[in-house]
Length: 186
Image (cartoon, rainbow, N blue to C red; front, side, top):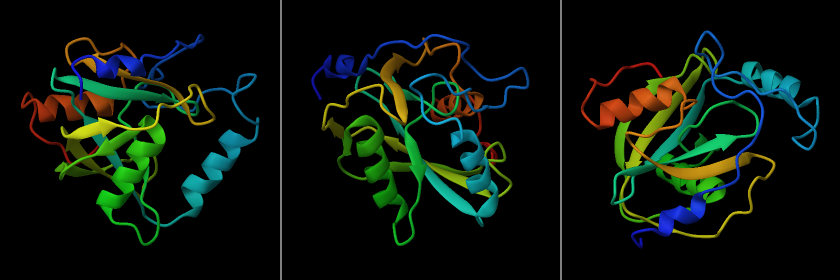
């Protein structure tokens, strides 16, 4: 990856209230004009509680300059790692590659390192997330942002994260840097 190639991820900012609520819990964003149908939050709630155990993957994309790739979804607040659900018949590695390509245009090269598997009680009582550290990658398709799912994708210096970076994202970065021991919960 070229030294400044990650600069192409810098996207436009949104307006409105950002960040986790007073409790620090990631909360769905209110529907705004052009942000999707008003029923989406209800459909998301139904989906969350109608499924059995769920498994997701997140990728901690680190540039050679030790910048981390974060994104902001249209349906939850805060900056976080790219990732998503593991589909039936998919391995964790396959799901990671698919999600990173879909959400950030990143193509994984080599084997990412598994940082850990975490219980994510913020999403539901049945959700687990596998977190991988990806240091070998190349950029793929340039994404048109914002889109229906992703509002912004950007690299940030580890010591200059946005104020509304989610608590779980900050915790994982501190663990990866060796500043905190790994925790079992997101």
